[in-house]
Length: 245
Image (cartoon, rainbow, N blue to C red; front, side):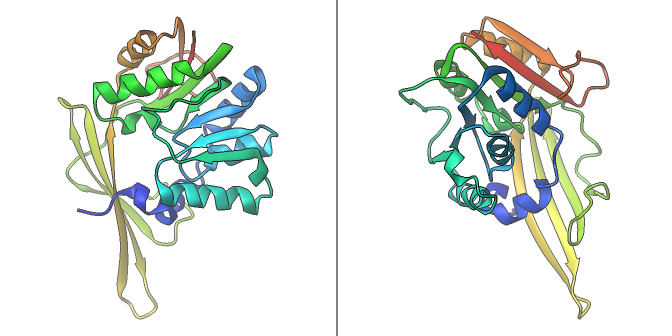
């Protein structure tokens, strides 16, 4: 089995650095609710940087050392390191002595929580850190999967130095998906170098997550059919949630 994707921050960024779909959504919410922003699962700082460049202070929670180091370096290179404070902490047990106008868990962060106890703990901790009048926002992808148990070439992932393919196994009963990313690069001597990593996720259904947010103490939960804050439609590929006490 390939190593966990979050242990290989460089490969993670190769795969995801070009993703921009969610940046306007989270930046817009920061403009609506104000900062500082508490970001749960900051990863390598892709969303963190966008918020910092927009002038917001961010408290970035990230337990993976490799991701945190890469995120801090990313902000330092952009000259906005002073706008982010990185915390080596777990979203499930987070207990800061402050509240925030906006708490976010972007880029499918909740899908890394494998059990109901994990999910409830993280959502309860998020609720505890929302200031009066504030909000919590997150997103998950709609669980539609292509052919599973076969190697799929991914030509749409442009800009990679090599050919990307994925191998995916979905368990609809456990609501889990395991994806192995494989990046093959042909060297000058004709040999092929493969870099691979595995991503494990637990997917949600729409009302399941809405109910979990309400159970965590959010009295008003809005679900959008994408990052444009439009209504949920049959063809939506992302559900974005905005929850308030």
